Image (cartoon, rainbow, N blue to C red; front, side):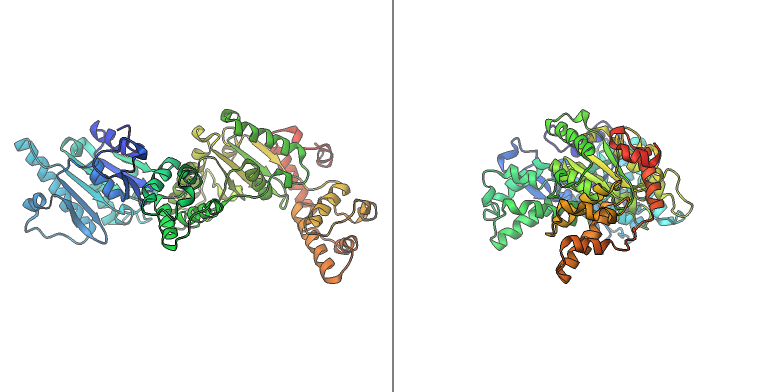
Amino acid sequence: MSKLPVWAAEIIAGYESRVSGCFVIHGNVGDRLLLPAQRGMAADKSSGSARLSSLSDFLGEVLLPKFEVVLSYDLGEGLRVERGEAVFQEWAAGKAIPAQPLGVMRLVGEYLRYLRNLRAMSGKAPRVAFLVKEAELVCPALPNALNYELNALASLWRSWATGGRLQENGQAVFLIADRWANLHPLLAREGAVKAVEIPLPDEDDVTRALEVLESSCPIALQNFKERLPDLGRGLRGTTLEAVEGLVRSREYERRPLGDEDVGRLKRELVEQDCEGLIEFIEPDRSLDDVIGIDEVKGWLREDLALWRKGELEAMPMGYLFCGPVGTGKTYLAECLAGEAGVPMVVMRNFRDKWVGSTEANLEKIFALLHALGRCLVFVDEADQALGQRQSGGGDSGVNSRVYSMMAAEMSDTDNRGKIVWVLASSRPDLIEVDLKRPGRIDVKIPLFPTTTPDEGFALIRALCAARGVPIAKEEYEDLKSWIPDLLTPGAAEAIAVKVFRRVKSQNERPEIALKKSLDGYLPPVSYKIIRQQMKIAADESTEPGFINDRVKSLLGL
C-alpha cells in the first residue's frame, strides 16, 4: 500500500476496515494514470515498467484483481460485463436488461441481493464490483427536488452504502464523477458513501509519465534525455493526458521540446484543462517596475526573501490590495508574482447558472492550485467574486456556498507558503469580515493616487519614457501647475498615451504635448469618490507605514 497513490490506498483502507463499500471517486477521473505493466505496483519508480492507462483499467487491475465479476455502466454503453461474463450470465440468463438508468440500477441491486443471500446460505458467493462511469450524468444535482427517478436513484445508491452490506459480502460500488458537487445532494449527506478525490499529478507523476513515453517518443524528448525531472517540474499542474498528447504530437511532427517551450506550453495546457475557469500568467516584470510605494515594496521583498529560504511559517496566507479604481492593484500583483518567480492564477468565469456547477468549478480550480506547488492566486473585484455569508433570495444559495468554499480553502494552513491569495478591491468594506481576518488575509496594503504635483509629474514622466517620449526633469517647474490632483496610475497611463499620440501625429515636443494633453483635463472618476475610496483603503491597512504623512493629512487621520 505504501507504493499506491494516496487516493487508491484510501479506498483500500476504507474497504478493508469495513468503513465503506460505496465510493465516490471524483476529481481528475478522466486523466491517464500510471499503471504497472503487471499486477502489483512496480518496486522502482524509474524502472520503466509502468504504462499510461485509464481509471477503469487501474481499478480493474490494481484494486479489483480478486473480484470475480466486474460490471460497469454509463449512459452511452449501458450495462457491461468487464469481467466474469459466464458467472454473471448464470444469474442473468433470460433477464431483460433495462435501457433506463433506474431500471439498470434496480437490476444490479437485485443481483447484489441474490449474491448476499447465496453467501448467507452456502457461505460462498462471487465477489462483485460495480462501476458507474460519469455518475454526474446518471444522477446529477438538479434544482427540481421532485424529480422522481433521480431521487430514486440516489436513494438506491445510498441504501447500498448503508449497513455495511457491500463490504461484508465481498461487494464494492464505485461512482465515478468529475466533481463531487455535480452529484445528487442525497449522496453528499450520507456518511457511509466515502468520497475520494484523485488529484492532479505532481511533478514526480509527470516525470514518471515522461519516462514511460521516452522510449516511443525519443525525438520529442531528446533535449531532456538526461533531465526529465526538470521537464516534469516545468509541466507540473497539467494532466498526464495533456502531457502525453503534447509529447506524441511533437514526436509526430519530429519537433523536439525545448526549454523555451515549457512556460508557454504549460500555460496553454493548464488553461485548456481548466476550460476557461482560470487564466494562467507567468509575469515578465518585477517590483522594480512599480513606481513609488517604497515602503510596500520593501515589505513584499522581505516576505519573498523568507519564501525563498523556506521559512513558510513566516509567510502570510494572503494579501489584500485595496484603493481607488486605477491605482495599479492588478499590476502590483503581477509584479509580485514576477519578483517571486511563481505563476499567477487569475480566477475567471467560475460562476455558472446551473445548480452545483459553480461549486464544481471551484473544486476544479482548487485541485489545480494544489497541483501547481507554489503559486499566487489573484482575485480581482473580490467584493463581488468571493460571495457572501448570507445569499440573496434569487441565487439559490450559490453566494453563501461560494463564500463557504472560499473561506475553507483560504484558511487551510496546509496551503501556507504554497498558495498565496491576493485579493484586489476598490471597496474592501464590502468583503465579508471573516474573509479578511488574519489566517486568511494577513497583510492589507492600501494603494493611493498621487497627493503632490511632483509625485504626479514623476508618474507621468516615467510612463512617457517607457513609450520613448522622455520629458526632462527640468520641465517640472513649467508643468507643475498643470499636473492634476489625485492622479492614479490608470489615469496617468491614459495621459501618457495621449502624449505619445500627439508626439507621433503632430510632431510636437513631449513637454508641449503633455501640456496640451492636460488642458481641460477631467478625472475619469470624481475626486469625491476617489477620496471616499482612499479613506476606506486607509482604514483597512494593517501597517501604519503603508500610509504616508501626506495621505494622513489629506484624509484627516
